Length: 117
Image 1 (cartoon, rainbow, N blue to C red):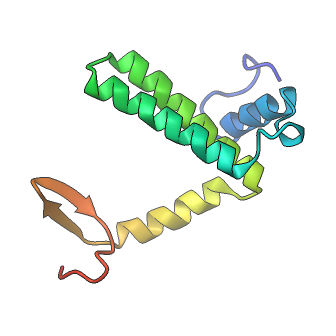
Image 2 (image 1 turned 180 degrees about the vertical axis):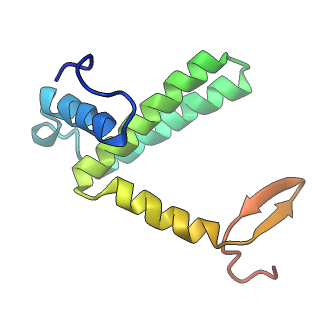
Image 3 (image 1 turned 60 degrees about the vertical axis):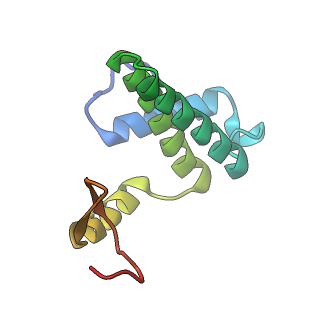
């Protein structure tokens, strides 16, 4: 799939490119869609994002590492055969109904189970 003939401004296009990447490298047949492996890769990318922030690297590097994580998350939806777009909107609906609290000077939005609101 050529990325110059598809719209770069849609979730569907992004998901199609991640699927093409999986297909190109036969992730489903070579262990690339194993969930434990994918979690380890996502943890590694999160660590690289953390390194960008804590070591004062530029926003371009942070953007690249964040894109790596997004690609892995989207690929996890492919590997797990679930609709990430639907899951996103369901979760956002829940989040929009939640309360927020200031904790140590920072906003936190959570269910705050077992805590006073």
